[in-house]
Length: 277
Image (cartoon, rainbow, N blue to C red; front, side, top):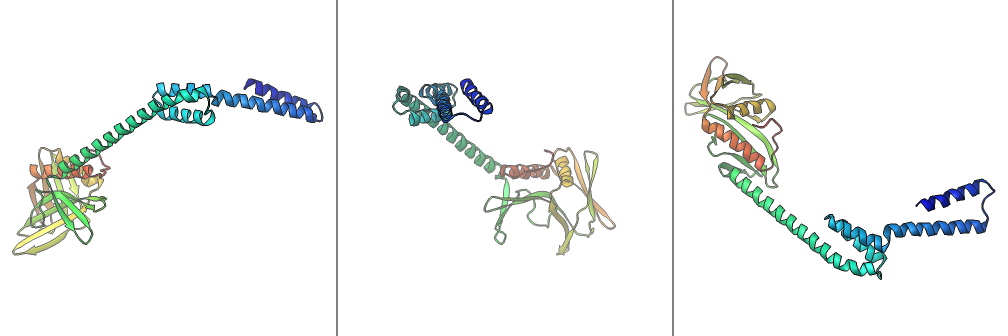
């Protein structure tokens, strides 16, 4: 490389100090330049250098680079002694590459089985209902109410046939004999107060019973309430109506159900972009 630079500088000097080199001088410089380029090429890609590089890559467990060096050696110098020697090295390289590919395949298969087991465990206690119109499976904990004619505080989510998930939905249900005309809910969770103002409350009645309920996507605010309830010793909800209110305790079964749904959602690939519970 150093010789090449000297010739190049000499060429520029001669050219700058005269009207230019003669044809003979130019051809000589050109020939020397080509010879130096060939020398550099041989230093970089000569049989001995490629064989040395292949062995070094092999020792460093860089089998892909080792294979590339051997392939280039055989391509550029097929009749060289190094090409003959490299064939046995290539066999070792291919065995190592195959071993790594097999290990990777086994690791991927193990991860897939573990993921399937994780999903199976997470959804074991889930109630699953299929909506044929939206082609969506809806999941909720088996202990949670399946209709609005029960008090409830629970989560649910949907999963399409392709595996994509919906948002998590928070369901809050009030079931009694008398109307409250619920406007908002307040909570006392281990003596810490929270409030939730739903955008809409649905109402219905039948057979002397009434039910009022709300269902909305889980947000940062509602998730903070859910998370606090899961980790609480005691949690109470107050349904605040237009004139009256009604209190009830959120049970340990409901707390467990909330956590089960969150775990199932994450096991199926859902992302909860809030603080971990």
